[in-house]
Length: 450
Image (cartoon, rainbow, N blue to C red; front, side, top):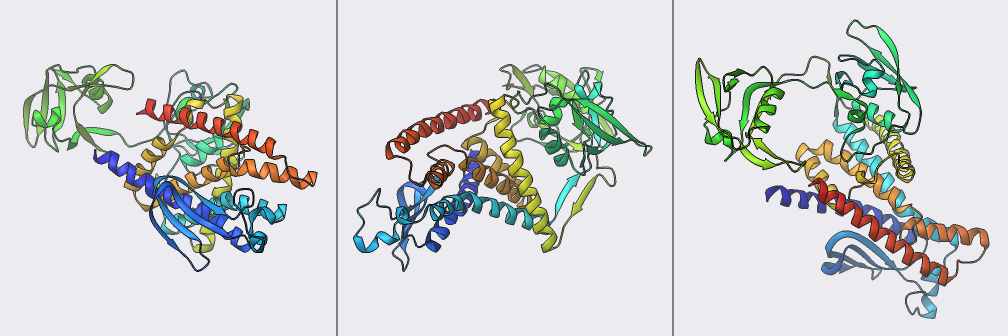
């Protein structure tokens, strides 16, 4: 229940910030263009809080926090007195209307630059892209990639973090091969050719690196208990923090994955643990609780977290930058996110990326809750990513979105006359149906993930 409330609160906070930024873009440019703004609403439905400014614009915070809108004076919608027609949206030049509509997505992109710049000034941690293991039979194994190799280039892209590597691979979806420059433990540099012909992101929640067979290096989990979950099988059996698990049913346990494998296959079965506690060896009977996993099969659950080894020196880097460098980096990263988002839309259309990877409000809520729990830097990074996606999504040429309005106004700019009301109305209906379908599909994906 706590996770639900935490995720919901984080979702409302994140979406509230991003919707406010987006709608303020429309609002600010509309005011500058001389359009009268009647209402600025964050959320839909029943107003919870409302007030007016000196221009008689009504500001509203509404009950349903799933978007917002800016209502402007418009003769197509309202009866406008003759003395106020010059203040209406439809009376403005097509260039002014294009600027007003485009201002929302542009505000999202500018906010992403701001959020990332603040993140870089606060300081970011990154992990050196060293290969931990290679999946047997994978594309990475066929390319000759090996554990402990440090990836320094993918194609012409310099790689300093795993995020760089992920973006570099994703930007090459649809290509036949890519060269990877690696450095081994003896500081010898080699170039490997990775075959990515036919490579697709067609499995739900499988990261690009994993689908290629690359497992990033992570410190190993030990068999010493770091934490015991309340009301778990471990707590009921009196397993304690700092206990070291030596054997199960007389079989020596040599590593954490081996223990996990034994536990998952032993739902509701009694197991005899040999445990080292301080200077003595104790025998403890444990019955892992049965839980249904994502595959629909009941699995055993113990309820302990392991002590994890320290990162080797130099593997984790902490970096912060000055204001100017942070803005430059924030701008470059925002541009990379924008281009990657458009690439992903193209790859969804061509089938290079499965529609199973689409996320909706539930997925965003979980992401928001997770990022908030990790701290300010993670939350700023999450806000930047979602802000860019919100801006890109709104630029899609669906008539119910900003991109659809822009499409009509650009046509008007070249035709020297507006698109007919009948054509616009038909487009809005089709766009609304497509948007509802996409939303339902994304929600279905979210629920299947849960």
